[in-house]
Image (cartoon, rainbow, N blue to C red; front, side, top):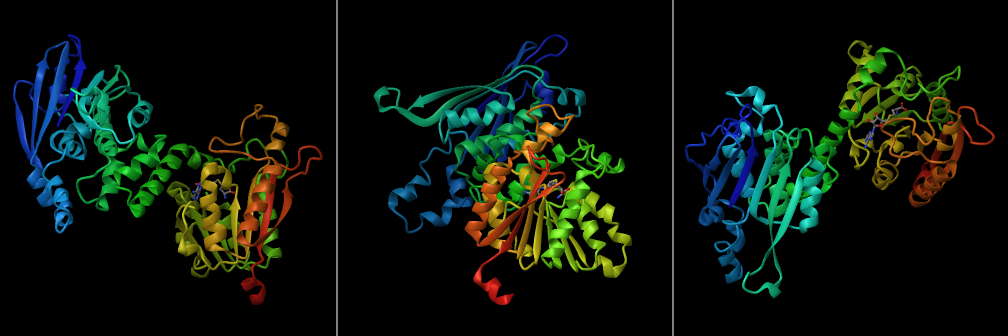
Length: 491
Ligand code: SAH
């Protein structure tokens, strides 16, 4: 198993700095035992203009079988399956083993640490990575989809099954060349890309995937994975398709993504400006009218135990607390940052005990079913659905209407038709940077009616804010009420 990393340089920035960055002197050969064999690092070329480090991993297939999960599997299996434990591509093809070796021999470099040249480690450099035999599950397209969004120029050359018989076609291996010009990636970033993506391409992890694998993935994915368009494929394959781990990784990456998009929260709070009200010039801010409409609908439904799903910074939770009719209030949000602001706003620590007992803040994602949300009278989704990708709405729908199933569900969302009335909103713009979509009244109603139909709810609609004769109200609200038999009997 083999991989080379090259860089180019000048008299001021000699390419041989690569040796410092990798903590390996270019004149020496470095050998180290790793769990499945021996890793060698050497420098086939080391000059001011160009320097290449090579990582060669000699795999011990027997050690692999002894320690790996192959051990129990072969017993009692077909004889050729037993043989396959010893005769396989592991020694030759780049894979998760190479990734593990990479992290063992270049651990400081991967973390971006370089004692001898600290400033050099933080600076991007031109790079070329070559992997002569890479199992590319999914083919060249997947290789490109994984590396190109990270800034790499990708050259994939299929490796024929047998050079003597070209008509046999290609093997599942490719020769991979990755290149990035100066100014884009640091060596640490590049190594972290390889550490995650080589096993993803191999798609056959050699070791048991343990729960701390998620930590490793997120550490190596820091700064790029949360925003990678193929994030789902990467996490699912990296974690060997273990559902619970993939789900955990997804949720934690969602937090990262939201935190990144969330940078203005605290400042906004200090200025006492409600989210999404800055384009609102009406005397009563729209956010306040929305809360009033929600409180009125909850009261009309006779709800006492209420979920505020996607509670954000806790304004509605606070308003609910001020009304003794609401005996139990749960605010849930995926963003830890929003919850921190919410708990500061509510001043939970100094709140009287009886009041504090009425409120709980939970971190969780509406894209997954959650047992903690079962058994409430009502759930509010105030300006939340538009923050999820449309493809994830069915998951939210199931979590709320299929699993939590409160008697009443209130959903508010912007009415995109009204956007022409916002003076400060340029044509065609959504109201908030993180909105994934904004719907017309017809679109929202069609969605809501289908949801109601699928989950045995009735639905009615109400405007929030001034109901413009032409374009409708700025905010639209749907009030869902459960109609299934069990509920009718209980009522
Ligand atoms: N309900 C509040 C906040 C709306 S902003 C209000 O009306 O003012 C949307 C909120 O939804 C954000 O706080 C965001 O963190 C949260 N959110 C987005 N996706 C989510 C998900 N999948 N699960 C839970 N909350 C989510």
